[in-house]
Length: 507
Image 1 (tube, one colour):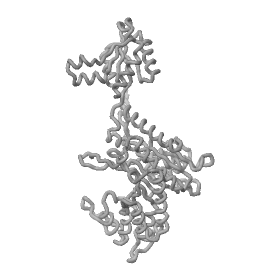
Image 2 (cartoon, helix red, strand yellow):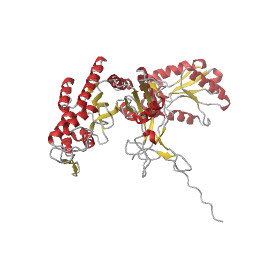
Image 3 (cartoon, one colour):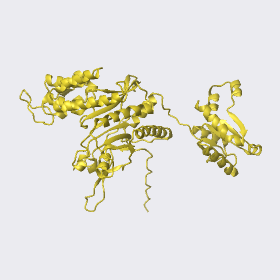
């Protein structure tokens, strides 16, 4: 008889591009999201929780195709006997679901509709260092108004949010630009930006505006001269390989660079430089007018250039947004993995996207919003020393006698009712040393001990585990005697003494 082959055991490992989050990390994220939600709620925004799964058709950006119907997202086709089931996918951001929700429920929702949403999103992309396929986003959006007051409010709220979670003023800057101004620059440089078949002055083919957009997106990496070369004839990259240029003339490239370098310490001078860059473009003038309105509203609200500034060099996302765009950048320096100093960089971005809901309704619906990168913001707070990698565990009530579990449970109930996090040791109580090891592993601040002798005398032993660890690490014998880490108190003073110890540890 053939031997039955055993099925191999599954590997205990996370899928590629995903990771597990344990107590301290989850707690840190939860606390930060609570603070952010508090600011959003204070501004009048309402919470929204939408489905993590959408139809691929509703997501829109990654429509099914013959070769890879799940490109960019984690997607699957619902079972259907005729193989015509709908394609479903995990959401890749929180904005596309908002567009679907608003289009579906617009008759019941107020206009404008102001909502915030927080949660994980998934992207079927190649993972790398610090780049995961599942990550958290935290969004706030206003749908249904074209007023620049909505954009100014988003910027102000983003500024307040950063300060509330622990990024001090001077360590961040919210920078604002406008896609319409760039459209005006393209119109001034190469003709109407929406036409792709123009003929350049020398008779050759005109460069596509999409190519120009992709090139200026590299401004922060290659600088002014690098962009000039890429906009014209091309350049050699760091490896020596030649990158073909877009094909603009030097004059056209200078017009684009006049836009990218228009920022001045004086905001009025910035607007003057932008007017030069757009020439006679009407759409460019409209974009500058919108930026002026935002600047005026922010100034009236007390948000100066030390917090929010107009900066035309912000180009990321300009291919997606239809009007104002904003990015929150942390300006303090950190050391990278090679020990080099660099600025921390962007932790949030957003802008106006007036065409997203139109996909569902056929009617233009203005909208604007911002998305905060939760993991990057948490990393920034750790860099500033606002977060620690460990969290305080519960008070542990040890078990000296299995038959007296009711007594120990009564202690835990008293502590919990007083607002103190606590638990009874539920492992094998035979070895008391293992109970204290467990408390140490849980990072518990206090252990409560009541054996038969303590019970008869009406007292409990309370061990300050934090102080005990400090004494054991560095104190002399004399110091140890003067600073006892274990206290005997009457049973009815249990809660008061534990609270006293916890408050002392917090100082």
